[in-house]
Image (cartoon, rainbow, N blue to C red; front, side):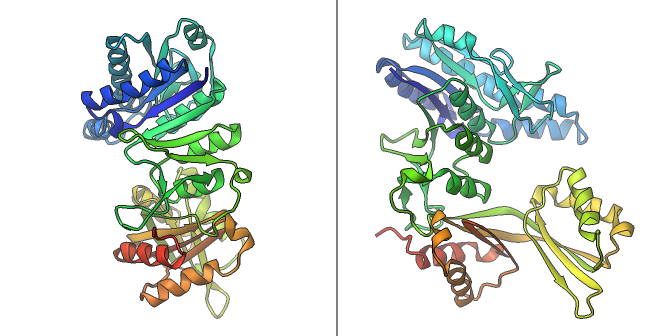
Amino acid sequence: MARIVMKFGGTSVADLDRIANAAERVRREVEAGNEVIVTVSAMAGVTNQLVGYVDQTSKMYDAREYDTIVSSGEQVTAGLMALRLQSMGISARSWLGWQIPIKTNEVHGKARIEDISTDAIVARFAENQVAVVAGFQGLSPLNRITTLGRGGSDTTAVALAAAFKADRCDIYTDVDGVYTTDPRIVSKAKKIDMITFEEMLEMASQGAKVLQTRSVEVAMNHGVKLQVRSSFEDTPGTMVVDEDEIVEQQVVSGIAYSRDEAKITLVRVNDKPGVAAAIFGPLSDGSINVDMIVQSVSPDGERTDMTFTVTKTDLGRAIEVLEANRPEIGYENLLSDDNVVKISVIGVGMRSHAGVAQTMFRTLSEKGINIQVISTSEIKISTLISEDYTELALRALHTAYGLDAQ
């Protein structure tokens, strides 16, 4: 007997037929004698619809009411999944975040899980009952519903696997695993059988949509065995594992991209101590995340141009914050551009191989693609380029690093 968490994303439960298909997969695990926790997302498109209702009703909405509204999509799916399993003769019950409870902090819209009670569901395991848990939601210290941020059902599933000491956490989605890059753009992309937690974390944070970033962090921190699988095909998926479980590392494992980028340049800022704090402090106070940063100093050493990126959704707010703090920062002009994309080359093999950056820069140069910003980490190199060159850059880099399927 094993204890398994099975998470089904929005496309996997998009309608009643797909919920029935997912229920069949649950049945197989139950008939194999396993204890099963099912975590579900809202049906495809429902969360966006609910967010739209909020925006149409109130532009300056109360985040507590936002969470109450957008969390309802997972509640519907959990109930429907439990009913479907019951109709198949399987004992099942739906659980909402507050019923378990999944305790979070009180940061509405982006709450973090602090504790999960296991007693009630473990007691139901003794009765051979399947627990169907609504993902994406929890309970604040003030007994309000909270949500975990977009893609938060992945985090719910992995956190449940950690709390219940599950043998495995399977993430079911509309793809059959993690690919070297987006196969919709690069036809020669190939599925990765095994990828390290660190690589998957970078892939997720740099734009790959297969797994939510925080879910990978939780899995890595708690040693949760994670597998990405297809809801529609009976094929092996991609295992996300510790680095020492992979015998020989590829220099580059994958190439991710993010269209959710916007570039801001502050022109001719006074080059003096404290100027960076004057720029990024107010942005941080406004909960605006800054990613890539580059600074270029003028020949006289008195002025500098500061370029950085934020998400497209944060661009308007970021400009407002910077304009409000213009006297303290002391820049001459502000330029913004949301027609950019971030391309990231990722692989733990970079630690022991030279020339990875050179290959990236040479390949983009040969294709006439200008690099606007560069950032690096131990296992990642990211460049910001014009969004118009996204597909060309991905295909060229995929070939240059020898990732094309034979």
